Length: 138
Image (tube, rainbow, N blue to C red; front, side, top):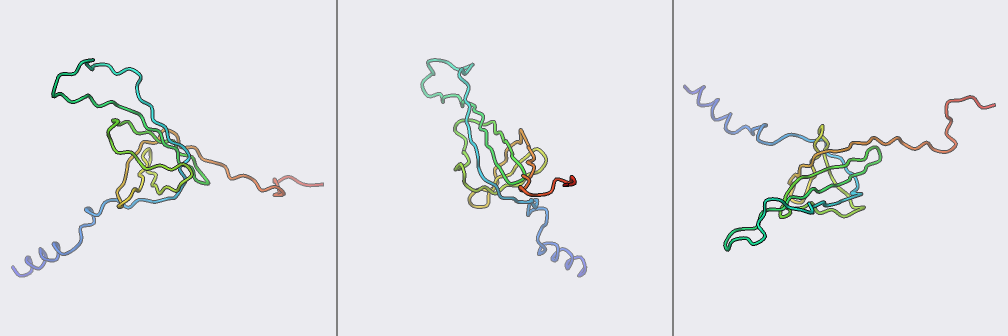
C-alpha cells in the first residue's frame, strides 16, 4: 500500500509533459505585407434590422506576408470583422513557427495566433559576383 501511495504522489508532483503544449521551431522574419478583403455584398441580412437584434457578423479575409532570407510565406485568415487582429508593422520583426500548412505567430504575452499558409516560396540565395560558376576559365 505504501508503494502505491508513493507512486501516486510522485505522479502528481511530476510536471505533465502533455499539458505544456507542443515545442515549436520558432524563427524570425519580417512583415512585408498585410491586406483585408471584405465582401462587397452581404447576403442574408435585413435592410431594417429589428429593434434589439444584433447586426450579423461580417466576414473578411486577412492576408499576411512574412519574409526571411530563405523563404516567403503568404498567409490567410478567414474571420469576422470584430475578431482580434495581429499587430502588423510592415518592415517590423515577427516570430513564427511553420508546421506543414499552418503558421503560428507569437504575440504579446506568449500567446500564439494561428494562420493558414496559402503560399510557401523558397528563395534561392543570390550568387555573389566574382563567385565561380563551376565552369572553366581560359
